[in-house]
Image (tube, rainbow, N blue to C red; front, top):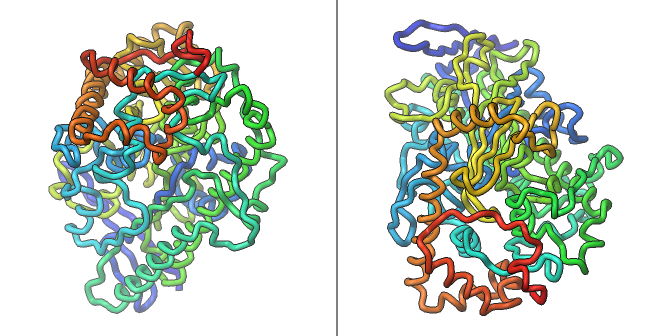
Length: 571
């Protein structure tokens, strides 16, 4: 009763059209295009799917990879929630998504932070094209790709990126906008397999829908393929699990990254660590730097990934039990990564692989029964749009006019002649950083450029010999830096983009300020995460805003002081 999947190529100028023919048991649906299950979790470092990198049991994902394709050098194009999804679902790089700002109508030229995303009326997303191309579409769980979402906290933190707020790391931990980094990870005292209930509830309703669609496919003379997406909130901090999932991790194999003294790290890293409250005051340093605390955080993080794997398993089981396994493609990835205590940080938003490198596994009927393949060619999230279009046999005239990625179907099919750029890029401009940054990698070396390229020295890492990215080799390799800078500039005109973001920040804040007569009360409100550092010296905080607004918008350097201004030891 085995179902046979046949893959063949039918030449059609000017491109090749993928045609899938399914033949199987009596009553099985005869689909002209495959079903597609697209699962995106949160905050997963792509390296955790590698054998030997971390003690994470992911048997269901490994099962898909063992008969599919694992993209080992896959990156998000912007490591934060809404912009990453906006880029993925539109197939455009972050600096190529113009829209009007929610509430003000300000023209925004890219998805710079979590407040900026796709226009809510934008109808060229992956799901829109699939729906108009004959697919039944189910969207569940976390969406978060439209402009206008997230909190005032996020907006103000992003817009005031270049405001020189006063701080003292030694006295108070500095100027911060987050709290989780200083907290302990939570292990709930229960053995429920469904620890993250909201995700499991969305899964239950979505798999129910899949069962109904599979049954309809079997009974219809003209069965319709389905495209299913669930966005999970797991593995997003806070770091929380329970006894059941925590017990799945071999704690003895969990490593804790070493940290450099704050005086020795890159000034932009110092600012990000501080903004994330990962730089304790002298009084709190003992508990914060505890190896046991940091190891528990990393263990809980891995336990959350293990729970996500169980969710993937539920989808696989649903499709198999329904009899549609040989007609369904699985795509599993994450919106961005998480620093998970590397470089004295948590969360995402920064340039390191823990933040920008994400997993991608594609398993298709025609890859099963063949040896697994691992693709080391750098790929990125903008490649997913054309990949899904081609997997779904969507006619090219239905695709958006412009996409920034390349279909990965050739890799899925085992082709040796896939034409893909040797480089991928990522960038960010929002909260918890002190300057716009840009990254380009060929999978061996990674170059990071800050701001316009003039404010800070670049970073260059050898990703093969220096997996943690601890050794900046830029000064020793000027020719390589020059080459990669030129390649980066050809994709992202980073100097002009950085200047545009600085202007956007200034204009956005001014519009908000003018629209809110109580703006000072709102900025100093206990509801904002920066309340404690803001009110240490409230008048100095407002003075910093006035000084920022008194000058034309410009990109500022990342401050390297542990106390700023240096005479403010009392802060």
